Length: 100
View 1: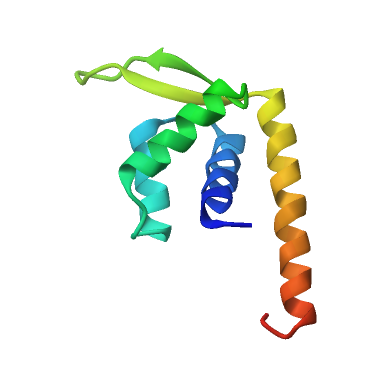
View 2: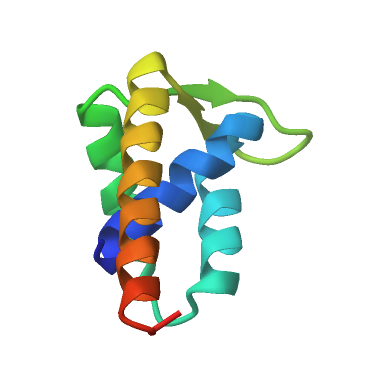
C-alpha cells in the first residue's frame, strides 16, 4: 500500500464519522502527513468523487463563504473496506518479516 492509498484510506475513514468540508480534511491530514501537498489531497478527493466513492454538496457557513462538503457513499464504504483489507495484509506481511 503506497502513500496515496494510505491518504485515500484516511480520507474515507474521516468521512465515516460525518460529512466534512475540504479544508477540514486537508487540515486533519496535514497534521499527520506534513510533507503532503495540498494539491495531492484535493486530487484524491476529486478522484473519489469521480469514482462515486464520495459526493459533494454546498453547505452554508455563518458569515463566511459557502463550503463544499464531502459525503461518503455506499461505494465509498466498499472502497474503504477494500483498503482496510489491503492495509491489514500489508501489516501482517511486515510483521512476518520482523518490520513491525
